[in-house]
Length: 264
Image 1 (cartoon, rainbow, N blue to C red):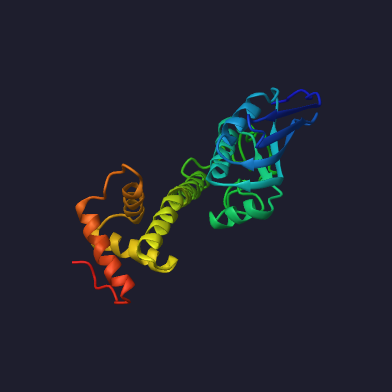
Image 2 (tube, helix red, strand yellow):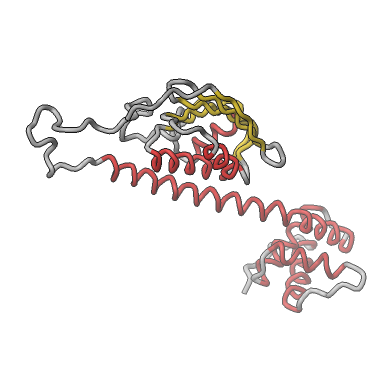
């Protein structure tokens, strides 16, 4: 298929918070260069989708320049997955190169190619031919390729994609755990302060009280901390009986210096 020359064009698309900026430049040879700046966080895939939708007809190759991306979380991996899917659906080679800093480290943790995570270990190189195979026989054989032979690249690429999807899920779970930990930190610190004031103990002892009470009541530590904080508030609800009992035991064990026995 012969494509007409594309007029040079440059556009910039911003997210609402300007966390991500994509400069798009197309060239007469059908190549689109996307220079990505900012952060690959929540919403970046939507920005990418809008950018790709606005590319002019006839684009035969998409090259992303990632050197100015300063931060990414698991949304950045979804960004890459969307790029790969776009290239697959439109039969257009897509590259994403120039990674540095923290985003480069995320690619390493995800087990992706840090030079170009969109270039699978198997299959055609990113700078390979754009057009499909020529019509007619291949290698001079009268009937073309042997119909009994199958191309192993799709199956191999599917295996790579499945592995990446699994790693993406693991990273998403880790990020969610970190978010929960960050969200629960203030209430834990408040509970430690309350225990330090109530029992004249150190910050470490207050932490040990929460930890032991959590173990003995079989309750998450942040739930114990929330109960302590709520109980200390004027008009607040006292902790449930099992947490109160566990707290009394934890205070006695911790402030006396006794090693806490395992919870029954």
